[in-house]
Length: 336
Image (tube, rainbow, N blue to C red; front, side, top):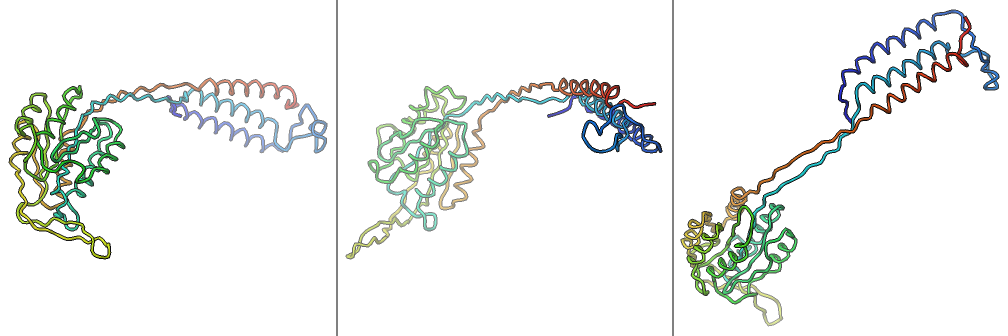
């Protein structure tokens, strides 16, 4: 509750002063006035006079009525707030590489896939107002979740995607073309593809640069992240020993990442390219930058309606005035 005219509360000071003066005048009298009605007859005990001077009851009744009038003049109000949010969201396709090389443990004891899933989960959670889809690819590209506001489904698809689910290879051109196909009919103010890969395109039916031109033609920006170290790396393999226990072994080979290809695709579409080798913080910072570059627009229209409550206090004041006046001339009437 709020009071529209709180300045009227200053009038309570003279009301309190008048009541205090009435109390002082009444208690200063040596003789207690007799009332017209015997309180002994009314209550069955006690003397026929009041322990509190009746004129003080008169003053208290009128003072309380004045207090209610002051509250009415201050105009107490309750507010009802109605907020209309107009959100211009962004449609996003998250495209994750599931090729075998994502098993490489570049990030201390965790592999590229584990780190990628952690960062992508944070990215999705941080954009509740955007439609987000999820696509996996390796030697082929498959859309697991089309753009949706149900991010729980996206998170579940991300969690359940594993290396080996698709034909091996790195079909970057097919992945981008499939993602563009999911976004081309969108009417969102901005449409982007977030591509995370660790290799060079080595398979597929669509040339990567052609898919980039396709995205550019539809006004879709591509943010690409190349993850992993170049050169000699160790890929873990899980095998079983003679006792049936799982044993992790490593095979070393030369890792080949072509950062220039995703960089070129991102540049031609107006997006941005990020290179991350084996630092989790750099990868997280890359997705924070993407998050800041592509923000939705939220317009809020606020309507506030106030309901007046002064009438309740005014009615109480009038009731007290009438009651005090009635008692003053009947039960609390004072003999001269």
